[in-house]
Image (cartoon, rainbow, N blue to C red):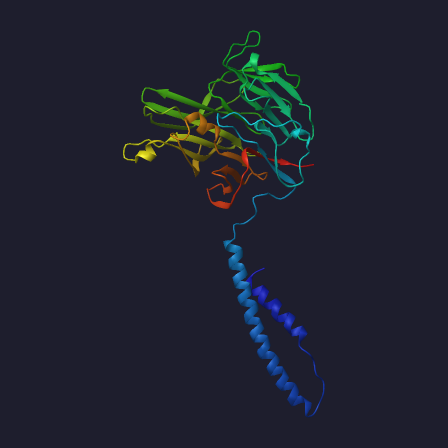
Length: 374
């Protein structure tokens, strides 16, 4: 409703409230005076109504739009964090037996991968990573279990199918399959197909399972680089979506890309890159810092934009491995129009151009995922 419509409505309402006097003779003079008085009152009230309308419109325009929680019965599921060594904090048992709340947030043991469409989570069985369970809220027993002592289980993610799991066999082997192969497992835990060699350990399937994104790290002499590449099943073609190279100082333990996240029913890919800000002209503090940056890329067009800076991690406080373990977490809102990011003890929702729609302090730990309650 615009300002003009509000003003007309207010005036119409006041007119219907004006009393009608039908007396004749001397009472007409009194009626005229009363009408004049009422008219003055109407004018004053109308000015007030218009002023309030202007203030309300200004407030609506400047408000940080919608709340972080999207419309519908969606729950923000968070993990329980990592310990000082970067290992997932284990639950006390029975957490997955708890059904999802109707709205708000809910914490389960830290998960490696989440599929909101199927309400499945991939979870380490212990801090040492000797096994993986596929869990779902409201069910105590796992849907599927993997023995990582024999498989390797590096870079494990859910997908591409609704009952499938993909992982790189970096340290284990299955029959004729050597380490370094990316393998898809079926709902019975057996290998279904081999997708070929894989270099990265951060992976993510596109919504329809047609493409997977893979984060790679390289170091050559005094230069290090991080890249996000795209691959299709049954194809050896590798498309580089993003690549960043930088000097590698003596203390530099490596850059990386984490939290690859595809938008629902879209070719857009959000990811967080960890790089060093070690440049000669910077201060001593900056030369010892890692920088988190949020990017948004499109697999169709190849366009990549930096969305936001998500803070720094001082390597004197934490090494590269620990900085990676305390990486920011991100999740697309269910409508695919904004990103929820957990970083620096704040839960922030970003528009796709990097505009902060809302931000609030939180004690939640990562990772995070929006899941629909039923």
